[in-house]
Image (cartoon, rainbow, N blue to C red; front, side, top):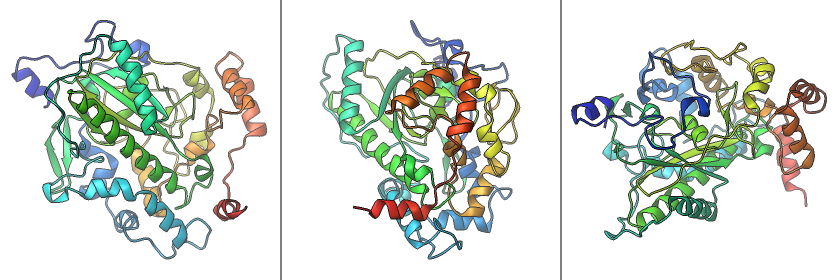
Length: 407
């Protein structure tokens, strides 16, 4: 249902501050301006690569095609050979199956449309006496299914796409998410750091595909559990709503200069999924550990970006093109040159993730000590330490293959 539909029905569209104890924009670190406009998924850069002649090209078509038919060889370099594409595409196999399952019904579930591959739950609902206890239970069950992070926030219509996107006809279609599901369960899956360290390469795209595969499993399992309790649950991945604002409100991390969620546990190395539900839950609060203040100083991602798509200045309301959301003061990435670089190199790019100082193994005491330092007034020292001891240089993909085969 769109915002205009809600107004015609006489129901106010829920937004930040709608409920008792709701997370405010200030607490979440958002600065939403008066001229804010909800975003239509048709304007997402990946959607535009199909319908917009300013973005679509032979190279972008080939980029998408290589996920179905791996190139035998693309570049005379490790990381772009048949086995690299073969592994990357294999990692995408599970989410691709669900995305293509109902294409004849004009659906790409998980990417343009929410998942519908669920069994109906019972009519009788399991009573929930304590939303706080149920929240703890949902997080426990999420971890059973393999979620690395689970948080809960309230529904905020501002971050729900105003319209979905139809690949059939390359046009908008109505948003099908009900607007009476008051809670959102947000999950995050870590991506393999060793693979990310080989960026840019086709091989590194395996980290993304495995992340989406894990997302699919967790979302479908956890949503079915909620449905089995007798409640409604709509599992979504890249579709339906902007994930990062919801993840921030759910306490999973902070917003970084490179436009990505930075988590305390895995830095920016995560994929995000959401489940909209009417199961009574207690929302989490946003978590801050010094990311914004550190990113104010740090320019590693913007300096390393080959096409200079990442801003070097402070957060602003500037937008570059129709693929940016209007009316939010933040660090905004120019999606057009970013995607053209992807298409030109024939695989997704995560250079900004690889070089990010928060891309660390926080199971190690030294990394945790650095994270603490970066969140204090001594953050300039933390940045100096990064430059001296954590250069974020690319690992040769051939070394990744060799190291993995050693006894």
